[in-house]
Image (cartoon, rainbow, N blue to C red; front, side, top):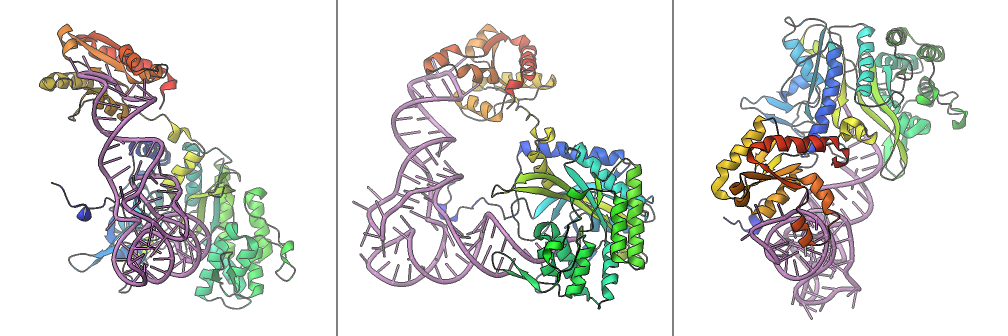
Length: 521
RNA sequence: GCAGCCGUAGCUCAGUUGGUUAGAGCACCAGAUUGUGGAUCUGGGGGUCGGCGGUUCGAAUCCACCCGGCUGUACCA
């Protein structure tokens, strides 16, 4: 049945979605296994939730009439209730814990890997379906729970092959920022909308630098393309206070040159000293004081666990999401340089993050339930592993199956018997299932990455033999052969064995191949 | 969402001031070779030139709109 070309369906994928091949799936699974091992070692247990939740359970993104799918994929169920594809794993976990609260041990420590969906503009390395790998502790309000998250993140980095020094877990606290707001309010109240602008500006410090942040805090900023971003609209004096919080000395009026950075990895010093200098610079009120005490405790616990500032570092510029964090926030940053598409070296950047969200479970209950956790961006971490050539992703790809050629269509049963014998012996094998001739079957085996093929035509059958052709060795030998006649006559790396010795001979070849690293594809 | 650049075969790209039947390399398929993956040679399939309108005797080429891609920016739970 031939379809008219014009009505033929075009095979295509919506943007922001991707297919994956066997090599990528295998490498990704290896990475997930490493992460899982770390979580298990810390005593976390697996727990899964479905892709779809009631929209109101997911948080602020309730679909409205005008833009029902803004940011999140939503649709109406038969009973007119709004459902949504989850956009992270934290909100569904909060729902799960609240729903089974009485039955769960508390603190409840669990982990999960899963696909999440966001309906927003995709870009390079950004998809509308992507995987996160989360761990959470619900029911523990102590900074020790947050400290454990940081240590576990550090362990994950090393478990997947990121060297010590190539990553840092940066820690700050939403309460610390709240303390900043308190302190700045002495010079005039800051409205909620303004404060969101301040947080957004602070979050961009590493990308825009001090000048850019200052502009975004006050009037606004025009980027090189001429696009204007509206500022938060706080006073220059308040903005100076924000800059002081971030570790810059001087004021705007004294000139930009006097600003001095105290963040980032260049100035690694004692976490306690960093917190002290911040306390002295700011003069915090009660909220800020509490945040300082929490972070001090956290730093003390991680240090006791053997994690110093080169691995877990207090950094006030960490903000994270604007929505539900209530206490410590953390971010796993890879500090090595990679070339961007213009060839300039840039820091690889964040591969995951998290924080304390004491209010999220409480939305389903009368009272706050303390909770903390973090999330790893799986595909982002995966591309980082490629960049550092971690053995987890560069490890040799597996060979394809042994292919038993079908030389004589009348004797499919014989070939099936050989294939089954190989499988029973634990050898990955298949009988050729297509309709093509021998040459095409050889090409098929080649494309599948077969280590060898089994050949039994009429001649071999008459002698009670099978031919085994080592495809890897054969390809190597063929390079030296120029003419096709010679190639045909030579039958490189091919030999006959008695039919009864088939399995044994195949194993010998596979064994020999596995010892020769030069065959690695 | 806003701004800029770009859409020609599966991929990478040619295509003259608007002018016959739109090309190349790679990839794919077949033959040379009853039954041998490589190399070589010969042949073949594959295009509504992103889409839809317009200007024109004539559009891959010029114009408008739409769609898609890339880049920056905004948002990012």
